[in-house]
Image 1: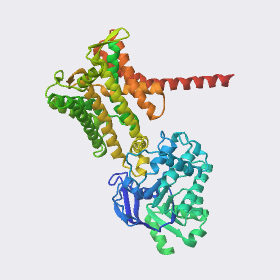
Image 2: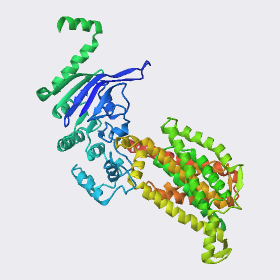
Image 3: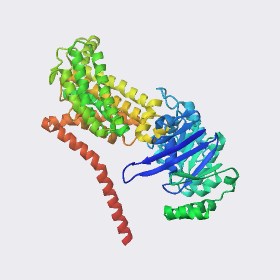
Length: 270
Length: 317
C-alpha cells in the first residue's frame, strides 16, 4: 500500500545547523497493516511521518501510495487520500467553528466543495450519530465551538474527522502525547476501534512503549535517521516494553563511543 | 434630518468596505492594506466606464471585478511569491495609485454629467411616487434623491449581506472560514489554504471596491486620493460592530459590521457638526481604533491586578 524507497531529508543543508533527519529510509507497508514507529528524540520518526504527509518534499527517494507516485505532490493533494491526527490537539480542528461545522468540513475531504449548503439536515443527523459512538456526550453540543472542548475531546473529534471519509492511509503523530493519562487511554481505545472496524492502513508514531507493544502488527525503531529495527509477526507479538527500552539503551551506549573504537569493537566481538 | 439621511447613506456605502475588512482581518486574520488602493480602484474603474458612456449597472459590476483583481494579486504575491502579507498589500496599494491615475486620466473627475446608479434609481422612484423634489419627513424637507439613494443602499446591502452570509455557509465558504481559523487543519482536509486565502482576499477587495464604486456615484465625483485611510475606517466599523453584538457567530458579526459602519459615520457627522475640523478626521479615526484595540488589554490587566490584590488581602486576613 505504502512504499518508501531510500528517503533522504536534510534540513538547513550547508549551514552550521544542518540536520540530517532521514538518511535512507525504506519501508513497505501492506494494505490494512498497522505500523508503530518508535525512537529517541530527534531520531527522525516524526520527520518520516511528515515526509509521507507532504509537509515538505524529500531530497531523494520515492514515495508511492497505492499505485500513485506522490513524491512531488503538495500536502493538500495528498490529504485527499491521507487522514492525519497531530500531536497538538489544537492543530486538527478549527477552534471558533462549531463541532458540526468542523465535521461537515471533514465529510468533504477529497471531494469537491461546491456552493451547496455545507450542513444539511441529514448530514447533521449523521454527525450526531457518529459523535454518539465517541461516548463523550458531545452529540448534544454540536453547535458549541470546538475551542470550548478539552484536549482529549478535540483529539477524539480530530480522529473522527481524519477517518470520516475512509482514508487510504492514516497517519497518527504522537496523538496522545499532549493528553493526560485518562484521555490518552480513551483516545487510544478509540483509535483501536476505528482502525479495526474500517481496516485502515495506519502509520503511528508514538513515544509510549506500551502503545507500541499493545497496538498494531509491526514495530519500527528509528535512530539517527535510520530504521534500526523492524519487528513483525511473532517477533512483534513477543516484544515487551522492557525489551524495547533495553534496545534503546544499547543504541545510546553505542553512540557514546567514537566511530573508530566502535568499528574496532565490532570487528573483534561481532 | 438631512444630515441624518446623508450620514445613513455614507454609512451604508462604507458598510461594504467594512464587510471586506471583516473578511480579510477577521475571517482570514490577514492584515490587508490593499483596501486603500482597491477602494479607489473600484471608484476609478466605475468612473471611467460611466464617463465613456457605459450603463451604471455594468460600471458598478466592473468596479467590483477590479477590486477582486487587486485582491487576487495581493493573494498571489503572498502565497506564490512568499512576500510578507503586509508588504504584499502595500506593494499592490502603491502600484494601484499609478493605475488609478491612468484609469481616471487626471487626479479627479466629476460625474455630474454622466448617468449613475443613484440618478437612474431616483428616476425610477420618481415614476412611482410622482415628480416631487422634496419630501416632508416629520417636518423636515428631504431631497428625493437622498431618500431614493438611501432606499437603494438598504436594498443593495440586504442583497449583498445575505448573499455573503449564505456563501459563508456553503461547503466552499465553510472551508474558507476553516482556513482562516486553522490553515493546518484545512490542508489536512485536502484543500489548499493558499487558494482559499487568494479567493478570500479577492472577495474582500471586491466588496471594498464596490464601496468605492458606490461612493463615487453617490457624491458624483472621483478622486485618486479617495482610498487613503480606508483600512482603518473599515476596521473601526468592524470593531464597533463587534462591541455591539459581542463575540458571536459570523452572521451577527456581518450585521454588526454594517451597523458599526452606519454608527461610526453618524458619530463622525455629529462631531463635524459640533465643529470638528475635517482635516482631523483621519487622526481621530486612527486614535479611535488604537483605543478600541488597547482598551480590552487594559481592562484585562486591571482585572488581574484587582484579583491579585484581593487574594493578597484574603491571604493576610
